[in-house]
Amino acid sequence: LLGPSGSGKSMTLRAIAGLETPDRGRIVLHGRVLFDSARGIDVPARARRIGLLFQHYALFPHLTVAENIAFGLRRLPERERARRVEQQLAAAHLDGLASRYPRSLSGGEQQRVALARALAVEPAGLLLDEPFSALDTHLRSALERQLRETLGSYRGSTLFVSHNLEEAYRVCWEIVVLARGGVAARGPKEEIFHRPP
Image 1 (cartoon, rainbow, N blue to C red):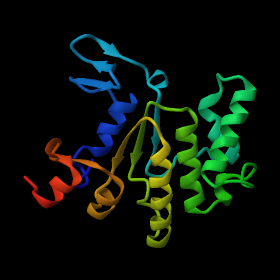
Image 2: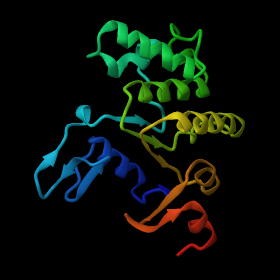
Image 3: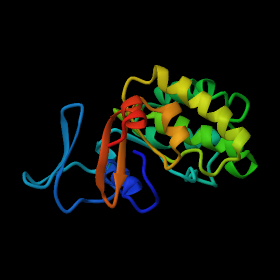
């Protein structure tokens, strides 16, 4: 989702995640209806299988890195929970940081913890709300490469929010341009950039 501030990008993510309730419409992920105002369907956020990476990461300051990653896994048996945490620590290059607290991490490390937490629940959908906006240019570039690598092996659907044209072009394959709360354009990135409507 690409568009200026106030165009509805973050609100769209919040509605898909179940944190906001739309007045009307329908939200379907992989054939599963998550919201349908006409049919009275509104699946609770906890049952939607959505991973959400907030703009400012929203890590729990009183929890360690491992505890943050395990946060959405409380209903799993302890052994499976530990396996997923270890898997995410390795995948996010966070080895050796499991017992540290968010305040002692760099911005890039915090971003990787937040992404690991979102992926640990094995979500059907991954929502990324301007994940690089709080980072400096050098760190942004390195983490963008890592995110592209991570998404290359992720099997669910990803919705990436940005207002940065270059970032959207590098990370995404299909682009939806939002303007004034509506869709201004949608299609493969090459088409949107080379022949904008």
